[in-house]
Image (cartoon, rainbow, N blue to C red; front, side):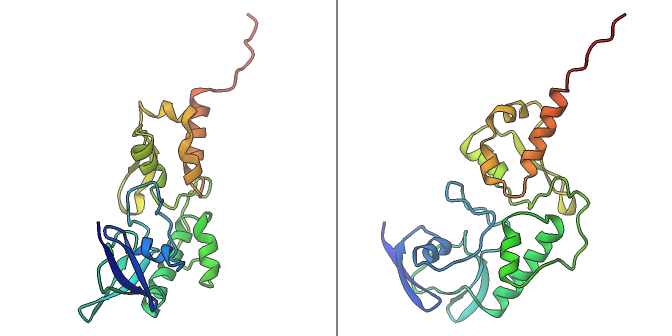
Length: 203
C-alpha cells in the first residue's frame, strides 16, 4: 500500500492510503473533536463534530473527517468560520438532547454554556445518540443486543427484547457510553428482572 501527501492547516502530512483525514490529523497532532468515533469501530460519521473544510480542484466543501479518505494534494482546514459555525450548532443541539457527556467539555471550548433549543424530557437517561454502544455490541461483542429505535426526534437507544439478557453480565459497552444511557437501560432491565424480595405474609 502506498502513501499519499496532503496538507492540513498548512502542515504537509504523509500517510498510508486508505486512512481517513481524521487519522492524518491525529498523526500530525492536530485536534479534531469527535463524539461517535472509536478506534476499534468502523467509521460512522453520525455526530458530524469532526467536520472539516476540504479543498480539491479549487472547490471547497465540508466533510466528516472520520469517513473521508486521504487523497494526494488534498487541502484540509480544521478551523474556519464555516467549520466553527456548524460545530457550535451541533453542540447546542446535543446539549438540548443530552445535558451530560463529552460534548459538555467541547461546548465550553466553543464558549457555549447552554443551548437555545428546547431541552429533552428525559433527563434521567440522557443520550447523545452517538451509537457507540450499539456499534460496540454489534462489531466487537457480536451480541446484537443494543439497537436504535424510532426516527428523527423520536430516535433512541434500546435493548433488543429476547437478547438483552446478555447485558446483565456483559456490560462491556459501559466504557464507551459517556452520557449514561446504556447504564440506565441495563439497570432498568435488572430492576424488572430481579425485583427486591418481599417477606411473605403469614397466613
